[in-house]
Length: 413
Image: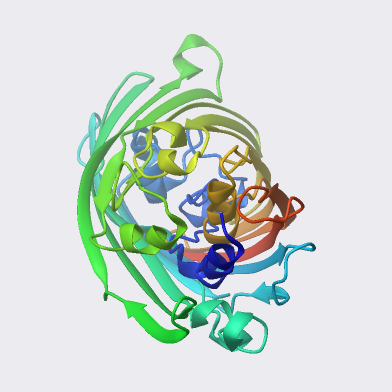
């Protein structure tokens, strides 16, 4: 590839829109404040109404009607350095995205119909992130600050969980409707004619449909009080954002088999929880099938194995929680340097280790407050760009870290 072409790609480097840093790939480690405080564990431990999106079989612990309302304040820090020591290119610097604060909402309702049937409804923000390089105008080629790029992707899921319980066995299904919107805007310079241009096709949005299946078994009737096993399956949900990804990737010379489709991947998992006195111990394992998801598979994403550990200590009207979550990065170095370049600069979903802390306080028997904090330590990845230019030592380095604070109000009646 000619050096001028490489320079043009550097100028176009920020147009990858779905820069979600929502921990396990582009998924939050958990949806719901209680689960986030326990490292994301939610398959075999009940968190009341918020369990409707994680494992709806666990809403069978709700004794009447429960409503939760809250959200997550998500704060990523993303920096990228392009290094071409042997190429005659202006230095790029360590560019920092100004899109460092996002609010992700969550609303859940669960209701016990009778001793066997339970139903719920909810709206959950499952991911939401973007990048904003307008504050870096003096750091990039052409004084464009990564092309003054601003992107935004938001994903919301609406679900109606239905659960059936008989004895120690609980089964559930939750039809899911997902809404997503994606917007990409950037400026650039055509290096062949030295003509500046602006690009942006406006907001693209889509609805997709899927389902979640859940199972839980309480071994109390079998003489092992406090032991619960759980399992989940979540179907893939196909989303198409017309004119977004194909336009964004064209300057890289990439042809995407899936076009403008980004399919949220299928996942499955199992969990175990044990309650003894005031102590609750939980462990979850799940696999996220990025390699089979349209769009993500085009960029070489690999399946991710996620392990979550959680602990809770509860008194009459308060509880404290801690947890740890490890999810192997779906973004890995591949043979095609264009994919390495695009993934680390546009899709740096490489977070792996997360430490969590949470707690609850019940003001009355009906009303309580839940809080959680998640810390993802700084993670830095360097991939080779050899072959993208005449510089055999070309590399791209991306680092990011995450903080998030979640809150939730719960009311029972």
